[in-house]
Length: 283
Image (cartoon, rainbow, N blue to C red; front, side):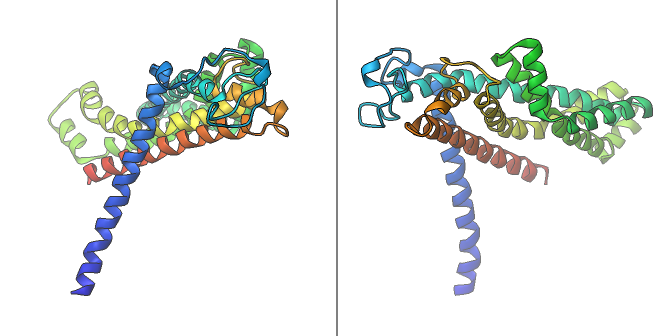
């Protein structure tokens, strides 16, 4: 009886951990979405109001994240920066998936010559560092949120393209596609009704995880001066602005960085849960 209880108890505990992780990540992302849509609900102060008499104050009950070099409330700036940071993350992840879907579809379904060309493009993008691509785009387009979206989106596209290619090849060789061909369905209908939906389904989880990863990438590039310039409250810009005060006011770097890590972990956890759910559905 003890062995039976142990066997039945382990899966139940595992399900509870998954359930708690999913709820915690969904709740965390929900708070960030509220901050992006209605930041005035969560922000206790005006994020742009300067008070030099309160400059570089450490975290307290009045200023939860402390104040910056201009006396602005850092917590309020983080809240107001969520909109731009999430927009950059979602835009970069979306762009990467759109490019990956186009490249992966051509690599999997086109003839030998087009597929070979696309595969070489994917390999070149893989070999091209994202940071170098960002430097190139900044020199052409200037430092802006759009530059970050394009640089991070194109940098993440090759990995997504290989996933899409593998998913399409797997669907193309499946039994239901062979049955559709045997019934005489047109090639476009087979692609639209059978292959494309199965290729798109895993991208839901990839997009969720990609948002957090893209924000981390964009914040890292902003930290070295390739992103949105201060005094924007975008999270990467906050890191860039706090870099000069890292020894005397470490909270200007640590706390915005902690928020970025929390968002990335929540997005990855939720994406993994969606991925597991989809895989169970396939099974």
